[in-house]
Length: 268
Image 1 (cartoon, one colour):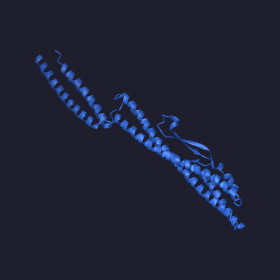
Image 2 (image 1 turned 30 degrees about the vertical axis):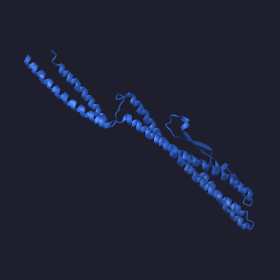
Image 3 (image 1 turned 90 degrees about the vertical axis):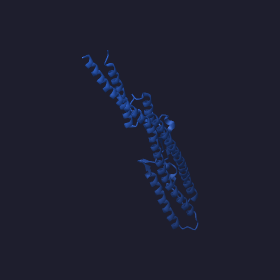
């Protein structure tokens, strides 16, 4: 007679029940269905990929906001330059008035010179993050995606050296020669206006990218949550069921011990 068989079976069932209960309690404590590769290896790989993508999307949103900030800084500087150029143009037209005296024209020249210096100062001091925006031709890229697509997910902001956009002509501007002076001013106004329009369009593009990235991030995190997060209602029900089974098995093991003792007493 194998009198230890019921006890062994009860111990095995109890151990399995306790192990399942421990895992369920771990899940309830963490709020996650998958805490390690042992829980679900395939799901864990998917979750980690989604974690990487969600982090990239969040970083890309910050990149896009940095792009907008750079463009806004540049546009603010160009707005000031445009205002000064408009005033210079007005003064140049005024200098063509035949009733002005030499003293009048000299006063206009002085104001134009001050405006020219102000434009130079704006060009040399407008910077973002220590990078001057108006004294070099360059392109700055902003990654706005998960990084898996490569260059097609990069938005580029172009910087133009405004010193080459007609500023040198303004340095030798002669308001007494209204026609040439106005032509020089108009040339630089055209460059600045074109850049402002380009930067405005790029700000809208960045804003659109931010909306798209934010929604994509929400969708990725929702999908990840469905895979990784625990169904608390189901987990609580399972924990209750396992607790009942555990108590029942403990009671059965105690009964098996009593029965085994009674048999041994009879045999003794």
